[in-house]
Amino acid sequence: MKKTGNTILLTGGTSGIGRALAERFHADGNTVIVTGRRQPLLDEMAAQGMIAHALDMTDAAALRDFAARITADHPALNIVLHNAGIMLAEDMTADFLQTAEDTVTTNLLGPIRLTAALLPHLLAQPDATILTVSSGLAFVPLSRTPTYCATKAAIHSWSQSLRHQLRGTSVEVLEIAPPAVQTDLMPGHATNPNAMPLAEFIDETMGILSQDPTPSLVGVKRLDFQRRAEAEGRYDAAFAALNP
Ligand SMILES: NC(=O)c1ccc[n+]([C@@H]2O[C@H](COP(=O)([O-])OP(=O)(O)OC[C@H]3O[C@@H](n4cnc5c(N)ncnc54)[C@H](OP(=O)(O)O)[C@@H]3O)[C@@H](O)[C@H]2O)c1
Image 1 (cartoon, rainbow, N blue to C red):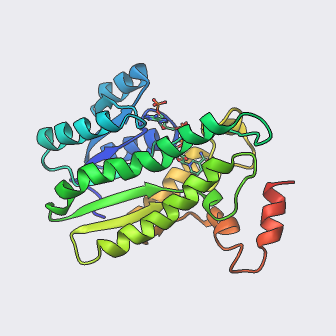
Image 2 (cartoon, helix red, strand yellow; image 1 turned 120 degrees about the vertical axis):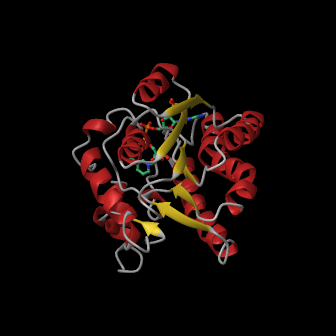
């Protein structure tokens, strides 16, 4: 992935990891288009010189219309970063179905629908990248958030198939798999001492993204605790550590 001169669409750019990556891409000389639902935060991004659009990732028709509009307005669009996501606790002995469905619609169907709408355009670009965002919880789940972890495991799997199908095209597929990072993804997470400070995570991730070639799984060192748990024969211990 080249460092500068790209036109990047980044979903969920209003806060946390997405916002911090958008600001770094913008500072590096890329045209950055961010989406989200919170208009005051989109206005802040626009005030920084980025292009900001309201877009609800759960709205299939809006995603289709948005993809048509954004590729017409920005024909140089060559990178999409599927960052938008929600993480909600579910008590599976109580009423969890709506949360589970919302999580699948946002975290899994959202990136699939947006990719379907953008792929013809990306394939016509000389140099394009699709970045997905999975999680360390794709490798070892947190049982409090079953559907969240399942969507991230699905994104991990889907990214590999997409990459393989698109081999030999101009579109590379990269997967960013963050460990726990201090953001407002869940209540109290921004001050969780076991989560990585956001600035540290962004610095390390930007360093990996600037490697040539970029590794297909963009994982900071802290990810190894989950990513390598099974291969290193300590899966049960990792599961128990996450789920005391
Ligand atoms: N923080 C972590 O520990 C961690 C670890 C692994 C993976 N991740 C992943 O990293 C990504 C970013 O999360 P974060 O930690 O930065 O949390 P965050 O600050 O809560 O950011 C989530 C972003 O997604 C957007 N979003 C959520 N639902 C949306 C919807 N229906 N339509 C449009 N946008 C929506 C939010 O924007 P609006 O609210 O403005 O719509 C926001 O910009 C997520 O995919 C998350 O699963 C995070």
